[in-house]
Length: 118
Image (cartoon, rainbow, N blue to C red; front, side, top):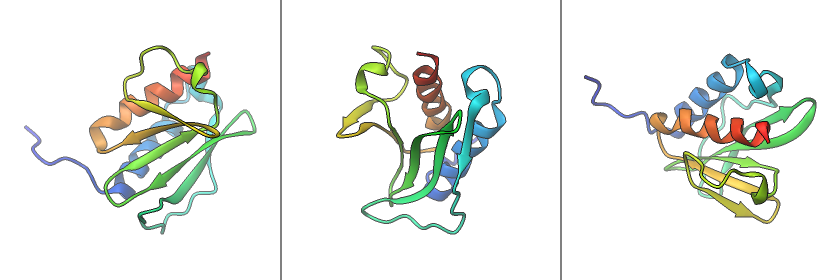
């Protein structure tokens, strides 16, 4: 049984990117990771690791904080289903999903998938 949790923000962001690029089916088939910054370090105000594009248009970005990663999506909160696998909080220009560890990566991908399916 695995007892170690992946919590290092850079590694969590890498796992997210792998899921986004590896799951090329359904609505995720048209999602791409762009402007990747492999040497980015977490900062208290958040450092952008990469952006997400959907069908050539900017969908959002993934940022690193010292204790977690966020996926910011440029969509209205109304575009989210009533229930999502991770809490998504509205921001001034979209929604933000907090991803604290490797276990939450699949759930974060499910949030993005549900937004794209709408």
